[in-house]
Length: 185
Image (cartoon, rainbow, N blue to C red; front, side, top):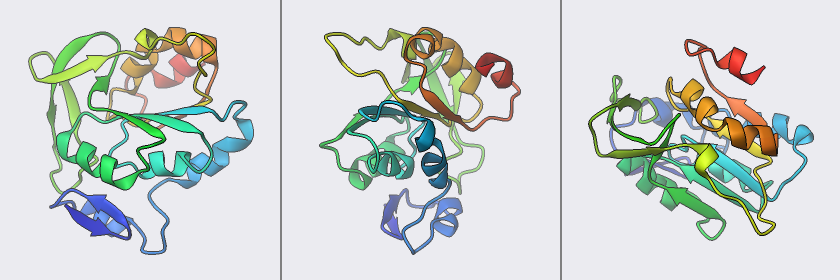
């Protein structure tokens, strides 16, 4: 692992090593600041596709607790080193539409955030957000950030029940090949 601007990154990452500023500001974290005026409940946030935790860390400035999903092993190890784990529940599995197993491939090895999920055979456990159980007054997420390299539509479809009940603010990075705009509407 390498430490760049106070953030642990996997060895060999050149993309984020260039992107992370040494002044303590990281890639796209301002999106959290922009979303916060619309968030009604600040007890819980979800970081789906947490990468190394820079957005998780930013969420902790506003939320009591964050649940972060990151299936790639080295990214997960960096995530755990980069955030206050007393307020984070880190899950080393992926989210999608349904429960399956998958594999990960990285078409751009110099970018540790470029891992893509390939459904089918593999060791990566994939679940869905609608299976996340809440009860006994447990908070629902006030904010959900989704950045999962082309699986955003699957995460939205797999979390439809949760989104309809919780009505969180959603930050999503997607190119809309999977009908993300229509799902959000």
